[in-house]
Image (cartoon, rainbow, N blue to C red; front, side, top):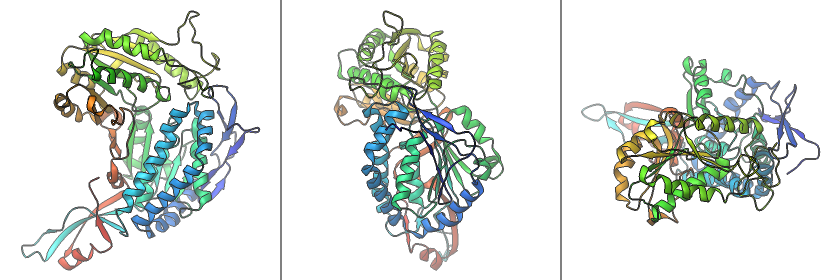
Length: 532
């Protein structure tokens, strides 16, 4: 969606569109280098933004029932669907993604919102959520306790990553808005255009009370300083940045809650029975190659380590390389291209540096960046673009590795890792120190029970695949709103989605104690929070 004269994208705060001051930051096309738009958040009245969201938007949102807020989510879905073609054009230009990769972000966002609209409708006219049954505190049951969830009377601040400007907003906002908590989103600057445009369309449609959904494009400076004790923050990004955020007084002194989804070294594990020629082996190969190339590997859930029995190492290497060699890389506007670019030249430099770091430890099994001239031939994209072709590395003795278990390269890169027995495979997967997802591949579903449970304590999601679910499995890297998204340890220790479980982060749980008649009266205008 090229612009003849790049515009300065405005911020929406305190119910008004406001242009930032100072020197703006350019948003560019990562393939052509064209400047698409400018953003700036300099000079915004952040105090007014947070105060308006808390004092005006919050009460107005919470005056609606859960069911009424669910209706608003459904209306947002219709609005986004009506503008879907524009979103695809923005993604192509600003993120460098082919249409199928843009769909992961845009259609994934719409699907997630639609799911929460349906889930929220089941809560009906309630304004309070109940957590469990009443419990007597006196022998004659005259005095009892009931636990309730009430929406937190603050703001939900989202600091999002560059790779999912659409889904990154709505997978968080779906739960917050359904809970009755106003949202302020600060998208990653490099791909902020799509987030800003979606917010603009929803604001223009008048679907939410003013100030319920705000967007700040530019620097995050000063945002955490405004976070109070009843606000919540959700961050997606690097573990290093997350550590810096956690040290802020908003959390150490004011006890605001923070949910973190950080980088992780996700794994796919091929079980010993899945030898070359079996259906499970083929599924594993397809999934590893797909996860390396979807969105050019720029997914927090992408497979970074493909863990295989050492006796299947060579066969797996050859099969994955064969699939990667068929991946056409270049300008996403060309229909022949199957994988677009990274989001920026800075990201390209980081990926190439990361590959070199891993190559000091692992052999190179396939490198699409090398042809006869030692340079990749990208379709309709020059060497100065942000394109990087897939690279498969290998470490036959997985236990001997260090860097492959510590370093995530956020691009079309994975390492094939050999193991001697299933116990070692589980140990290698856990060397990631906590990951978002691990997937298992076997021809025997029951054979995956032991490793699935053994890996569950170190992973937010365990995704098991056998031949019976070839056409129905949802994919290693696809985050479904019905399932939890997040992971322990290095992955950030957070939880998002998981059906109605997502509402808990945006609520305060309180124990109400009193006479039995009061405890019974609390159930009026209330509904039990379902487990999912």
